[in-house]
Length: 305
Image 1 (cartoon, rainbow, N blue to C red):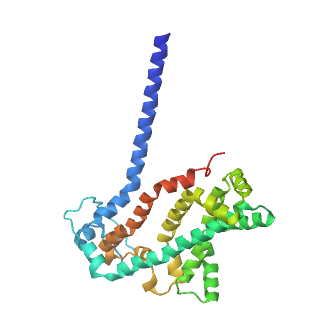
Image 2 (image 1 turned 180 degrees about the vertical axis):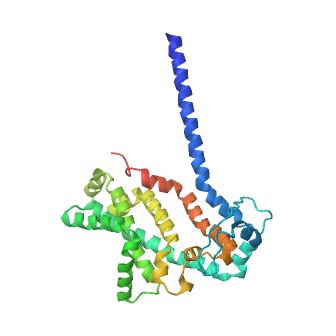
Image 3 (image 1 turned 90 degrees about the horizontal axis):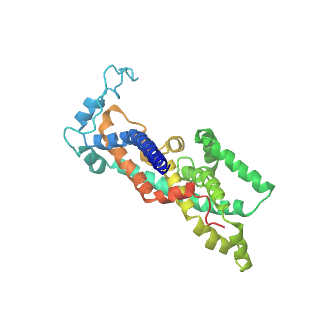
C-alpha cells in the first residue's frame, strides 16, 4: 500500500511538471511573438537606407495617383542587417534636429500631465474615499461614465471648450484635459477605499486632523498605486496622436508620436531609428517602476486588519 502511494505521488509530480512545462512553452511562444516587432524595429534601425528599401520598399510604395499599391511580392523580414550602419541615428540625432525637437515636445507635453494629474487625482480620490453620500455617488458615477468613453468621443467637446477659452494651438489645450482625466481618480479611489477604517479612526482618536491623515496615513499607503498610475498615464499620453493633430495646428509643436504616425516612403529608415529612440523612455519607466505597477494593480489594500 505504501508503494502504491509513493508510485501515485510520483505520477502526480510528473503530471504537474508536464503541465508546467507545457504552460512555459506556450507562454514563451507568445512572449516571442509579442517581442518580435520590438526586436525587428531595433535591429532594422541599424540597417542602411538602401537595405531597408530593398526589404520593405514594396510595403510603403504608392501609385502615381497617390494611393497604395497592391503588394504582389513577399516582404523580406530580416532581423540581422547585412552591414551594421549608424547612419540613421546620425541623421536623427545630429543632422536633423527636428526629430529631437519633437522628442522634447513629447516630454514637455507629457511631464506636466503626469505630475498634475496625480496631484489632482490624489486629492479628489481622498474626498471620494473619506466621505459618502448621494452627491458623492453621483459625481463618482459621472467619473466612471467619462472614463468609459473613448477619447475620440470627447475630442469635439474638448475642442469646443478649448476654442471658447482661447487656448487652441497652445499646450494648455493638451494639458488641461489630461490633468483632469478621470482614470487616475477612479483607480486611486478604489485603492484608497481599501485602507482599513480602524487606522483612520485610531489616528482621529490620537488627535490627527484631515491633513495629517491625508499626509501620514493615506499617502504612504498609496505609494504603490501612485506609481502604477504614473506609469499608465505616462504610457497613455506618450503615445497620443489625435489630441495634437486636432488641437495643435502648428507642426513644430507636435510630439514625436505624430511623426511616427506619418511614415512615408522617403523616411522608412529614419522611422525605425526614431521608433527605437521613442521606445527608450517607456521601457526605462516600465523597468524602473515594474514593482510599483504590479503592486498598484494587484494589491488589494494598504495594510491588513
